[in-house]
Image (tube, rainbow, N blue to C red; front, top):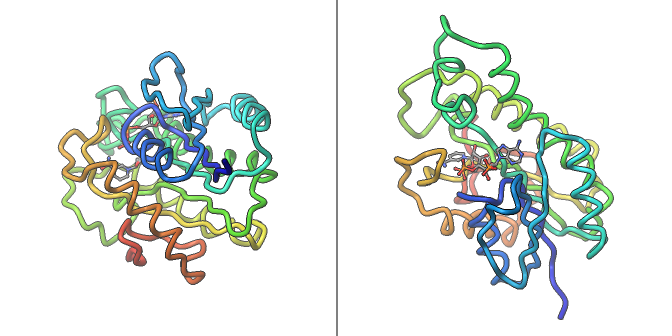
Amino acid sequence: MSFNYAFVTGASQGLGKAFCEYLSVNGYFVFAGVRDIQRFDLAHENVCPVVIDVTSDSSISQACEKVREKTNAIDLLINNAGINKDTATFGNKNLVCKLDQLDRGMLLKMFNTNSVSPLMVTKCFLPFLVTDPCFVINISSNRASFHDELPNENANYGYRASKIALNMYTFCSVWDLPKNVKTFAVHPGDMKTHMNPDGVDEPLIQAEKIINITKNWNDEFNGKFLRYSGELYPL
Ligand SMILES: NC(=O)c1ccc[n+]([C@@H]2O[C@H](COP(=O)([O-])OP(=O)(O)OC[C@H]3O[C@@H](n4cnc5c(N)ncnc54)[C@H](OP(=O)(O)O)[C@@H]3O)[C@@H](O)[C@H]2O)c1
């Protein structure tokens, strides 16, 4: 049987795991990028857990080698791994949210994980992006917009700015990606996950909506910031 192949970062839980669930029963063989393989509990014949810490270049390279044992082509690369104020600071959110308490190391950690790492993952996976078309999906956030559609209680400097940087990296990468590779950044919704316990959207439903953007692809979206429903998100 012939598959399409996907690689998803941050697949241990939340939206990343939902992408694996959705894709594995919809024609894809999925490499589920996780930090701790022992904690990964999605057992499916079309899902292969692969260790990856997106902040480590050697870990990214080792993940590529693992993928190469099975395929030379990835049709869908989903840069989903991310940290927000609480998950980055283990509950000390003021370190990235309150001007008088900001911590340089924590802010840089957020930029490293949310902005630089997706770019470095894409760099390493470039040799796999050979199908026409194939997609690099960068999971961004409504918080990256000056027209945020959801209420917000605090400044959340690290998260908002690091997701804006991710959107710009996405835009810039169109210059360098081969023409067969399409890319977009996307706000995935207000999902109930470890990152966002008060969220209302179901990750599995949001995953399907985001994949549908690739199925109804419009080249005007290349490099742009979209909403999960498939329209341009106001910047
Ligand atoms: N939930 C929402 O409402 C919402 C809204 C807008 C945008 N988003 C974005 O959607 C994406 C998924 O978020 P989520 O809600 O599913 O959050 P989540 O449940 O906290 O999941 C985050 C995932 O990222 C992984 N991760 C964090 N740092 C990593 C690293 N250095 N290397 C590899 N993996 C790492 C985590 O792995 P571990 O399990 O090992 O920690 C986990 O699998 C994120 O980019 C987030 O910013 C979410």
